[in-house]
Length: 396
Image (tube, rainbow, N blue to C red; front, top):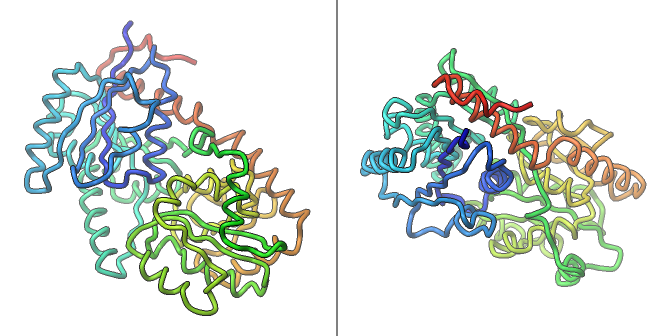
């Protein structure tokens, strides 16, 4: 029997976020004899292309594009999607972000599209402290409304699943496909990490930590900067990787004492192009977010041989047993984060033990082939359940 044709929707709203790497990753690892991916990009012309548009691994995959013209014309965008589904002979549709969720809903959901629809929810922040946060809050409300019409919700963590379950119809199926990582995104050039350390002008005895994520208040970049200083370790320096609405405030903060010369912000381009090398350059990784599900950046840091420090939020306590795979602290607790930093600074043996344990953990449970197989099984299951066909595609 021919492979099931899955139409994978992705927008270029956040071209390099962790969720984008997850989509590109599961597409790249699909068993094409079982599931044939078809890409559909919902694009804003004024934004950078997303990873699924430019990755060499996406070459040769059938590709469609719909121009996003704003919410006022979203129904027309939905009509374009219906046409693509009909002409391309699609068996199942998967959306992966707010814009694609909204497009699928305005296409009429599975009834309008004529095929099952799975909505992959990658997490909601929910904080509304500033006008920018309020804007994201509005996006999240629109997202929650859109996915209620899906046939099945997928999430990358149990924490995100619990959050989604609160607003879903009681009988809607929910599937957990635990987030994963792979070496494809983490390749570095020989000597690149050491060159980055030298470019910062660090003393010979310096230790370097850092965090990675969109620069939003809830990601806590400012908390890591405070914890580095509060640790009392004069040889500890911090790097804030990422970009976003809090970037200007953070840059202003670190330009003044006591942060000046101790905390660095490489900027957007370096955070994208040199992210793997920075993870390699860190002596340990300290994730500072206040609210999370299962961040890809933590898994990437673990894969890149980092000892890690993480907040007790989302699925992180499931992934990292405190004192076995890394150190955990209460989210938002700067003194506790500083204490964890101090432990790693003072105990080289602990760092090395945690480094190896973290790498072993991510290799055993959180790698790309398993993640992609979870997605394959999900598509086959829902098509089989809703249409009664393709039972032959089921494999052990």
